[in-house]
Amino acid sequence: MPGSATRRPCPSWRTAAAVLLALALAACGTAAPPPPRVTRAPPPPPSAGEACQRQLAARGVIFTPMPQAAALGACTLPDGVRVEGMGAAMNRPVALACPTAMAVDRWVDEVVQPAARRHLKRQVGVVHHAGGFACRRTRGGNPSEHAKGRAIDIWGFELDDGSKALVRDHWSGAGARSRFLQDVARRSCAVFHTVLGPSGDADHHDHLHLDLGAWKLCAP
Image 1 (cartoon, one colour):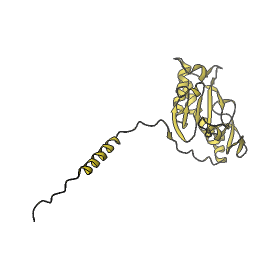
Image 2: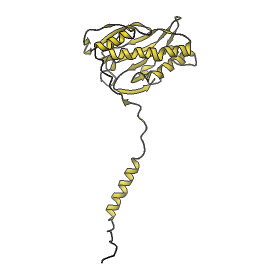
Image 3: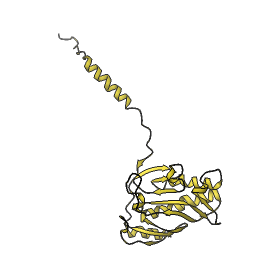
């Protein structure tokens, strides 16, 4: 009839049940998941080959260019450099991709030396590493970041007075060397994509793993 209100049909029980189920599922979906510990890192900028090496030289890094696409077993390292020293000497030369060498040099200047002055009142004279470019795989069978020249393992540091701060010996405890090592590890996350150490897992009980791989993970 004109002027009368239009009546809306009542939903059937099946329709009502579907609506309730949809609302329940929507409510379940509103709970925020815990933040992931591992996230994808931005890709490293292209090194531009010789341009990267010129930047290394300008920063005072002591290195030797490696042959183009240097090979080690089944692995190749394009744009590799063999680094002997930077803001501190290396205990032995280390092969790295050029962008990784740039990151290590920045790490020594911005993380390691300030932490040594802050906690030990000393300068680091030698960085003790356990290797960079190495043709190896992860436990999951994937190529390690070492196999791409994007990682370096650090045993510890030798100070300018000859004393040492080693992850294996001095990580734990309340002393100055422990504070120095743990400070370095934490602040390394601002330079590298992945940082693993004694607090991360048993495989890294005696060294720090630093890499510029595809994932962000700070677990020193």
